[in-house]
Length: 129
Image (cartoon, rainbow, N blue to C red; front, top):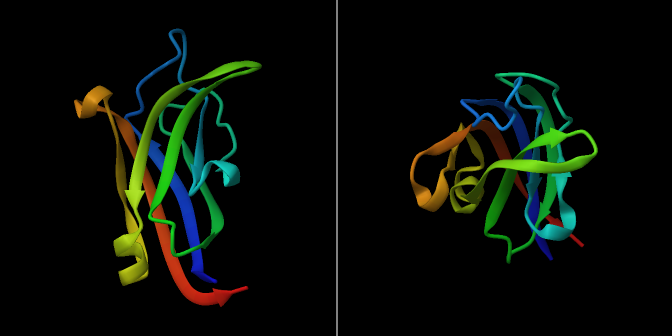
């Protein structure tokens, strides 16, 4: 039996590592709890500071401990470039019921940063069959 619903809003990003050499990134965010249920924002073309304000909903099971985000630079038909990734513990979100903060996209081996993503989350405990 599920423990509830998690609503995730990808608000915006800042200071993203620039993967495009001639212009700004064409960023989008994949958000997921497991690899089978990825959801993604729209691609924003040629922006320095993307604002999505897109909301996604997930059913949470007792085994779900983390939310993952991957930020990509779209390459229009070619393989996208990974800008950065983050793994967010759901413990506090489940206990407190909400989250509203900037999440750092750590650099290689945890050094530096590939940017930040502003996220909001809310958790609603209810049974789902």
